[in-house]
Image (cartoon, rainbow, N blue to C red; front, top):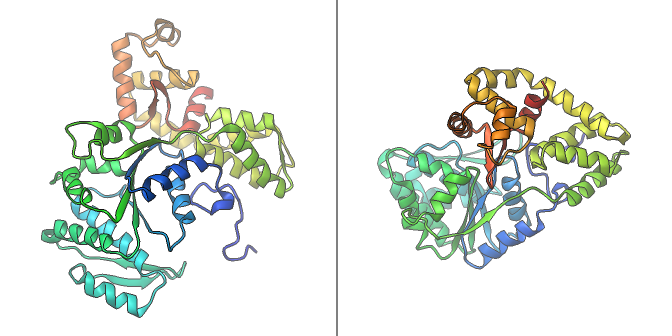
Length: 376
């Protein structure tokens, strides 16, 4: 039986396991640290599942506690100022009560009396948890209080807001302006604004008519270098008595275009499979298993699309990447019809996050879905 805190499979697809199980990202981690430690806020942009959250977790894990207080805030599920403030408050307070003590509890209760914080211990993990109750009329005042609390801390504070693009869709307030009005005056607190919708994030921080215009250093996260990823994978598989050839890893990496989560998923399954000598055939066998498992989901995706959208999606999946959507050879090869019709379908598929646009190239966002479309 696996002991508590013992790592079973080194290729995680759900969480950050620590430095030993984290592949590369040395340059990105250093760049983030350089920005924060030199009083620069930073915007971190990447498609979903490339690994931006992992980079943030890795950075915060590597910063000594005596250097700075690091707070990670996932705001993906927030829909308004009240949600944001509650999520932010709970992240700050949960961090502050680690380890749990009566002294810290009393101090925080006094400072944030208006939040009516309640603390508990998770029965499974044993870690402290916090819940707050924010009155609707106190949302903005509470947000100001939270920023003041961080600004007056003994150590510098590094705060990461993940999936930051959601604030652009908040109802009932100009959230960008509200945040900017507080953040621009902070000296002890510095931020990572991470987001997965490139177009929205670029607009938030690069448009002259937006409150956050030119207020941060912008950093794009790309795929991990294939050679470094191969070395990482081979090292952990060898410890498990498995050999992964360079050819086999190249096939694996190329199939999913180096997209981190999909590479990790395939490596996770290969580790589980236990095949001693992993070949390209082994990789394809594991891939087919995954595609068949997810077939009901992929069929549902297709049923929710128009015939034109299905045709365009399958054509792009078959090509892998498409740059010139209006190219006559591409349109004729897949019998897609008029260029204007194709572009309308592409826009709809991009809005649904079924297509990903990256530097003018289009591909199916879900790499496994794209492979299923191309092969079934």
